[in-house]
Length: 420
Ligand code: PA5
Image (cartoon, rainbow, N blue to C red):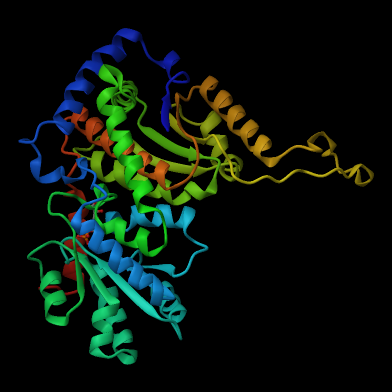
């Protein structure tokens, strides 16, 4: 399923140094996975819903009804409220009907107008995801979309077409009750960026026609694998090595991949680590690059820039497409050496060559390997990185579940916009 390779980081660490940190990592792992008294209010994500969960069944039933009637579902949310679903849908669900359109990731009038124009003449449903329902982006998008939809749909139709995902007891839940909208719960004990296995992500995935059960079983099996691996499970190993490297001045980590299907997964990852670890003026700065394209830009810095970089490669074993480079000798374009070669092989060669060049050039490289890009492996990836991030945050001595830092710009913006 998912495997971490540390062989390209080993030469940057001493055995004794890493094993000391592994001890600490394991203590943090137990705290994250087992201790139900500490952080209890933040750890709802540790438990992955079961197939017979009644809330899950109701959600899947509503998603089926939406699929039958909708051309478009607008997923309204920002940050953790839509990143996980978007990562999977962008990778696997783009060709399916209904189309999932994203609202709430921007305040740009140009982008919002474009999104609204897409809805013209279509059967539209919306899912508004907002944990505290004070965030400006989803709140303002909800108002604009609601008003647009009310021009076209009766009160009864609106009740069918508006789904809201919020916390119990919130104003959003009251709005749902007042208007007959479907209400899905955003569990109080799950933060946005840890919400990949809650209704926040599960509902849009189901509407997009993706295999929710495979996704959840990837997470469950990843959890089991971590719990049964003993003292050196991959999440602890990754957290311990990162911590070791961070203490030695490696302050930037770049997540990379050679399959553009993973582009939006990288955005999710950047948020997870950035918002969880960037505290008390410390933490590894998370960044990302999509290869081979970015080898022609950031590749220069990775090879020869400041040596404070860690690189983590997402590596995919099975590629479900084949394109063979044809023979064309008469053309004399200088590419005859590629004749008969599949792009699968060319891309793998580029990946192997890059890991070798960068790791030998002063960049400790992790490889996180998955068999293929599908729902099951997304489940495993999300679970793996959420655990690793929580463990890593605890090893840094910070709270990986809060995000007080993002409140500062909000306070300043609300002042400018005259919010009382
Ligand atoms: O991870 C987090 O908690 C944040 O990124 C939130 O998801 C994001 O700020 C959106 O918050 P809300 O759902 O309350 O609008």
